Length: 165
Image: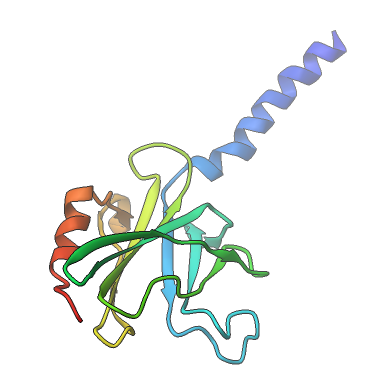
């Protein structure tokens, strides 16, 4: 009987503990350039921060470098290095200097409509960051929620880069 009562008491506690992690979307921010005084990110191209609401969380980070090199479409899967600070990842340059590039960086949390936040980072002809956008739309209480980025939208963004020889 005591065992059953303990199980019944534990289940609601687990639901309360698990619920905040599932409620609401993740968010992604990009730091460029990284802090040159921080030895951990000194040689990083940029730093990715993953959040659940306002809390840095070590959510899965993934991404690709999408480019056009000598008129040919290229995709490079990127590797990220987790850093000491929770929810912080270094991205080192893994694409060639030739061509024009867009970085599609993702933070994913669980499943559902709002499970992924994507940062689209356009690189300038000189290889520096030209712009960063996190596609989003208004959600509850005026808070912006991340919008999914379709393959077609990604391809259109890459096509708009042109080509650099």
